Image (cartoon, rainbow, N blue to C red; front, side, top):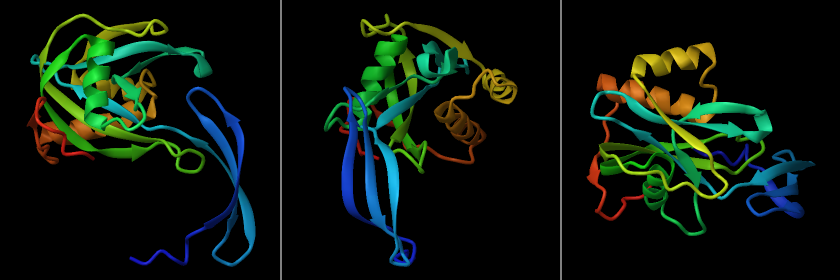
Amino acid sequence: MDDAHLKEEGIASELLFKGNFLEAKRDTVRLPDGKTATREYIVHPGAVVVVPLLDDGRVAMVRQYRYPLDRVMTEFPAGKLDPGEDPLVCGLRELQEETGYTAREWAHAGAMHLAVAYSTEIIHIYFARGLTVGSQQLDHEEFVELTAATPAQLLDWCRDGTVSDAKTLTCTVWLQNVLSGAWALDWKSADLPPAGP
C-alpha cells in the first residue's frame, strides 16, 4: 500500500527538553498538501512488558504507585530498554527484578505503540512460562508489590477499572486469545538467541 499521500516530511526540529529518561521535541513538518505545521512529541527509548504465566493458571502481576496519576496501578511487569538493548534481554531482566521469577520459555507476541499522536514509545510484548520463584531485585527507587490473578479476575479488573494501564489492557487481549487457542505463540528456551521483534 502506497502511503505517500499521507506522509508528513520533517523540515526542522527543536529540542524542548532533555531529561534523564525522556526528550521533548517540536518539529516543523511539511504536510501532504505542501503547507507546514508543528508536531510536539516525546522521544521514548522503548520498553518491554511481560505476561508471566504461573503453573496454576494465574498470571503474575505487580502493583506500584505511579506518581503522575497519584495512584497505585496493577500492571504486568515492564521496564524500559537500555540503549541498544535487545527487547528479550530487557524482558528477562525486568521479570526477575520486579517479580523475582525467572522463566524457562519465552515467546515474543508483538509490539504496541501507546500514544501515537505524541510519543515514539514502542512496547514489546513477551509471554513467559515455566517460572521459577526467586527474590525481587528492585532498583533502589522501586517499591513494587507482587500479586497474581486468574484470567477471569484480570478481566473483571479491566472492566471495573482496577486495571486501566494501556499495556496491561492490551496484554489481556493477547492473553485471552492465546488461552483460547486463537493466537499461537512461538515458544523458545530462554537461553536461545532472541529472534527479535
